[in-house]
Image 1 (cartoon, helix red, strand yellow):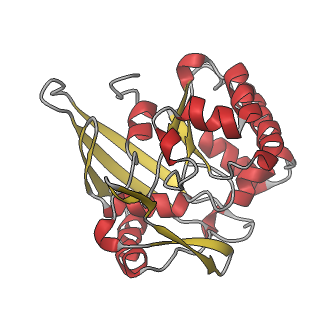
Image 2 (tube, rainbow, N blue to C red):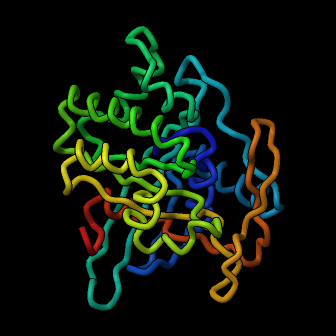
Amino acid sequence: IIGPRASGKTTYLAGLCYYSQYTGPHGKYTVLPLNDESRELKYQAEDTLLKGLSFDGTGNYVHTVDDLNYYSFKIEVKRGLFQPRSVQIILNVRDYPGEVFENILYASKTDSIHEEFINECLMSDVDGCLLLFTEWENSKDDFYSKLMSRFVKIMDEHRRLHNYRLAVVMSKCERGEIWPGRIDPETDLFRVYLKKTLNTLKEGIPKQNLRFFALSTFGVLGDHDPRPNRDDALGSGGRASTLRKSACWKPYNLIEPLCWLNNSHPNS
């Protein structure tokens, strides 16, 4: 799971492990934390998000991977009546700060954490990655387009261009401006707000290995109240998000991108 600063990576993981019993449009899902860091993150979700507090950002640029949390989950997907096949997904995530991702454009081969980041993302036994974007203002489009052009070249250098799936996600889609576009995010979100980035990805990544999604860790207040179940706040690292009403907490689309990455989505 990669993405720029403040794209909600840690909060997404916290919501994923807190909702260990989750029902989505394509079946029921069980999320089991496999290591101490994952179990601790679940407790932090209860002590932080449910109390209306926010996670601090992963931090400033770090110089060693030993400083970073490593999370591991097993996700069991149980299909509906007409899809009896169950699927297991193993999700392994090192929580790199957004600065490492953004530095893809400028990093040199002497930057050890950049090399570690790329090697972990593109190692041969990794099926693909979840890429979170949240800065949907047009002013970010040029930067993201250049960044993704460089990432595509790196994929090609590592011989992963044709055997690596990329789930590109507009996170925090509970925002009123973009919530209506969640059903067809490629057309109604990325083509509208990040058009250059969209075109760069579609030109560089084989069609079968690229899919666009929208997700929201916080969701909205209800089926008949589409206001975001999120408040904006200031954290130690700048912008932060908090849960508005814990009793109404219902994430949107947390699991579906992972199912597609695992080649088990009904529409793969």
